[in-house]
Image (cartoon, rainbow, N blue to C red; front, side):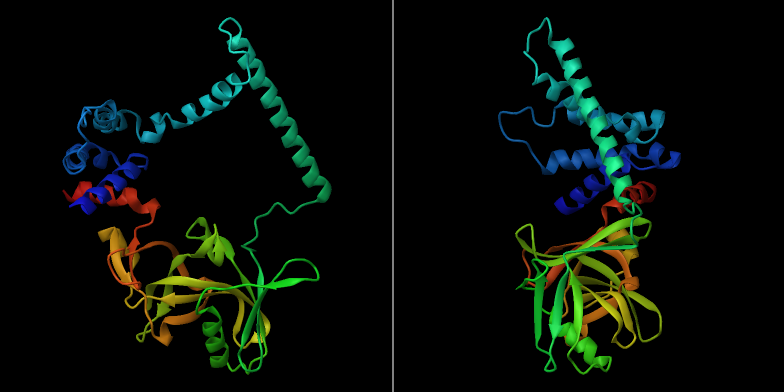
Length: 341
C-alpha cells in the first residue's frame, strides 16, 4: 500500500508540470484527493505538531483549480523567482553594511557590479573561443575517461590508463569486462594479441535526448555501473528488450575485430525480457541478473534502446533488482490513471 502511494505521489508531482489535456485536468480532482488522503493516512506526523493541517497541504488541493485556469503548473511555479531572489538580494545583501537607510542602494550597486563582471567574463570567453577556433558543435559521440585494454596471445588482459605522455598506471575495471571482450573476440575469429580502447563515460543522443552512460571502477569514490535497455533479436527474428548492466564501453578500430568497429557496450543482461510498455503499466518491475555465459555480451551502441533506473532489492539476493519507469514518463502514468478511474 505504501509503495502504491509513493508511485502515485511521485507521478502526480510530475503530472502537475506536464502538458496535459483539458479532459485529464478536469477529471483529476478525485484522484488528487485520494493521493493526499493516502499520504496523510500512511505517513502520520509526530506528536507536538499540527499533523497535516499545514499550508502546503492546503495548497496542494488548489493546484488542479489553477491548472484549469493557467495550464501547466510551470506557468505559476515560483521556484525560479525564489532562486533569482537569492542571487540578486541575499548574495548581494551579504556584501553590504546592513544598515536600513542604505541597504537597498548598496544591494542594487552590488547586483550591478556582479552583472558587469559576469558580462565581461562572457565576452572574454567568447573571444578566447574565437581565437582558438574551437569547434562548438557537439560531437555525435562524446567519450571521457579513456584507458587501454591490452590482450596477449594467451588472452591475459592488462588495463592501463595514461597519466602523462610517457607514463601509465594500472587500473581496475568492472568484473566480467575483460572476459566478455575475450569471448567476443574469439567468436569473431581473433587469435589474441589485440588492443581495445575503453572509456568510463559515453554521451550521445537517444530518443531525442542527450544521454550519459558510465561504467567505471572509480566514480564519486566508488564503482559505478549504469543500466540500459538493450534490443536483442530472438529466435523468431523480432526484437526484444532486456535490462542490462553496463560493464564497460569500448571502441574498436576498423580491422581490430572482423565485423566490429566503432563504439560498443559490454553488458550483462537479465534473465527475462522487459519492455517499456510493461514499465509504463506497472511503474516498477522486478528483474534478476543472469549468471550464464550467454548473459555476458558485447553489443553495438545502436542496440541501446533507453537508459534505465535500476536499484537493488534490499531484501533479496545480490542478483535481484527493481527497474523503475524513467522520470520523464512519470506524468503520463498519472494521466493514464486519471482516465482509467
